[in-house]
Image (cartoon, rainbow over all chains, first blue to last red; front, top):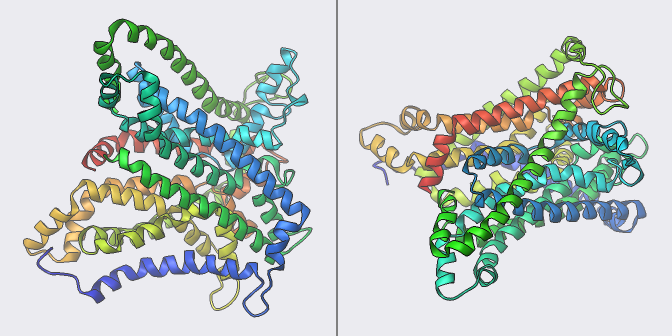
Length: 284
Length: 289
């Protein structure tokens, strides 16, 4: 290394501000939340955690959130993978840049803006709702933007581009030599996909799907802007319990948040494990 | 990417007739996918954009008339300047804290303490596993009782923003430190007799300016107009533009859509700046990996 090496103490001092920050604003608060969910260390009780799974309203919120997250991440993954493949494979090279730009731009979308934007097109006086009405189709009779299905449509707005962005490196790693190698060994296109293509892409697809799942489980602002408290989701339930004009139950909110944290953290962990698998190919 | 664009040519020389026919089919499919995708990404923007300039619009496909009144009214609203001002202050403060906090650490894991990388990476990417509403609750719980009471203050909001910005700063700084071959630069500088501080300030920092700028812009676009953290941590006590935008929806939806458009415009401009302004740097970064 360099002529002057860093002393242990020097290094520790240089790292200190960052480590103290993370301790104070990531680790301790998370720990405090876990403690809060059992009502404190001294008079601890698993009553609130238990209630998350036994109370009918809370159960429903978990089911709704899971339904929303599973469906939107599955659809987002399938559509995003297809479009990512199309972007990689198209002969229209000039389209590639703008499409990748559009995808990376929208992958970070979300928040309240997205909720309001969708109301203006799919709400009861929305542009598309009225357009369809002129063709004699009453959208509101079978679809509402203020429902779990409506939320799926809205969440796909960031799920699909996110999946595209996540899949592009995987498709780029699928070397053309492998297609040739497979063909010269007598393999058909189906053989190539079954024996080479899919196995190489699978870790990336699974990793992406899991990440979409996590992002949709934890989303709050979009849902709040769109539906207020009309749909019973985990994040909405947490906010009701915490703000509590009707029922202020901070320990119950902490318990619900702890369960949500466990689900999301496990998903992100699974994502990293799958991603490591995928990197065998993308970093090759 | 470039490998991929050559793919059809390579395949065509292999099996000319069959492949060329097989290729035409998918190409139409690809274009259909692109049209649907682009439409899906743009129509909500068009909807909210039209609503923000519409006079009356409830039973026609397109607005009856157009006006800039909503925009003027929004900009003249007594709450516009304070709320947007607070959001800008919070975002800029977040950027300042993030840069000061992260730059030395990232420099060190590149030159002096590579063994600390897994820890720094874990702590920086942890916010990805922390849903925003969970972060909000945990911070309120921790800082609303002594010894440290910060709940309800902009300080806690800014520190929460720093947490959510960590992954973005980490990636941006890590990429640019990789791209400039920090280890070699550092050794060269130290061999020439420069102190560590001088090396960081005179050699490394000027070279990673674009990385810092890209990280800062990303942090700005995730924090400006943010709703969840500001509504839980400061709420109406220090109303940010995000909280105001939601609050006026029921009574003045047109103003809300003007605010939404402003938010979209800011994030589009920032993304374009990053894509166009830093794309050369970005290709170097991926190339060096």
